[in-house]
Image (cartoon, rainbow, N blue to C red; front, side):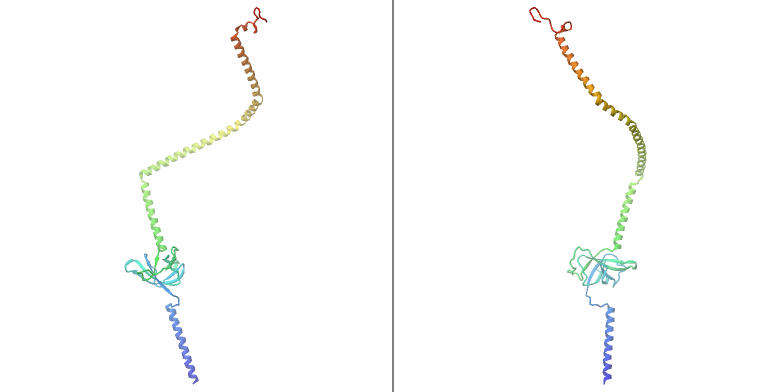
Length: 273
């Protein structure tokens, strides 16, 4: 009786083990996990070449989900609808933007999520929407294409402007201007040489005049110490002499007889001398 019981227990144990292994394999093959996911919708306005179902979805470089479906928008074929299956713990907000990105040299395309930080309110399902819609942005290649297009347009405008500027009349005027500038440059060079010569002559003359200036300084000092005081005394004497002569002239005008007699008149009859 004992051997039969052991065989049944062993059979149940083996069957349970095989069933557990089978369920584990199915679980892993289907990618089932305890993590909760939410579905979001993205409308792309550019080509999604290279993007496939099950392509990764990354938030700031961290894998947070995958692309579950890719299809054209039935109402507008210019848009591509992407259904994203993203972990519920991912902070998807009103400012979250989805762009296409390529991973290095492998050229693997995936969806990159980033938050612009303009609106940190959680993204919720709005009225009339099947799934919450994440805003899309241009990919790096699209931005480069737009920038190159603008650059080419600017070059074309510059080319047109140069063609309009460099016509025959303007070229001739430019040649004349360059010729005049050459002449002006030559004149300036000659003037600079003349100025250098004048400066050299002036410097030489200043060196030659230095002894004379020193002699003149000594002469001025001599005049201040000796000559000027004597000149002041002579002028004072001349002033006194002119004053005396003026007084004598007044007296002679009043009494001309002073020229032939003494300055004191003789006393008359009955007058005392």
